[in-house]
Image (tube, rainbow, N blue to C red; front, side, top):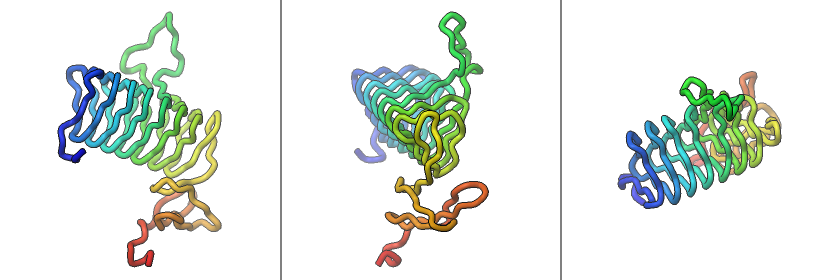
Length: 204
């Protein structure tokens, strides 16, 4: 589908009033997008996804089947949400004492390029850094640094990942991705990219 095309919404899905959907975005079967939500361009929203209300979703995002993106969650550009992963939005929910005002929803920010694996759970009130990689089934209970790889329950860091998704190997504080050639440096503030991918001339 061309990037300039109108958004596609399957006939089985519901889009409330006051929703904005960008060009080239596809919303598939049995989804519900609640009022006040914004979805960017070129997104792919899988089956049985609920979004909102008042959720901000960037461009070129993939949300796989059976994901609910609740109020308080913000997804920046290029985020990947794996099948049946879970966002929470209230730390101490009670059925008999409902907390359903906007101010009760603790904010969760998933920054550009981060990937969240299937069946992972993101506890609300935290930030997932740029290009972080959350392993399948992980339970995230704290902020995740940019480029970090975290796994387990509770999630613990097990390494670093390249912007392209390949796990990095550090013998010193400087390394290059074996796939794309992007360079990274480890320092007091974590992992930072210091050079882009190799050009075709460099690869040759």
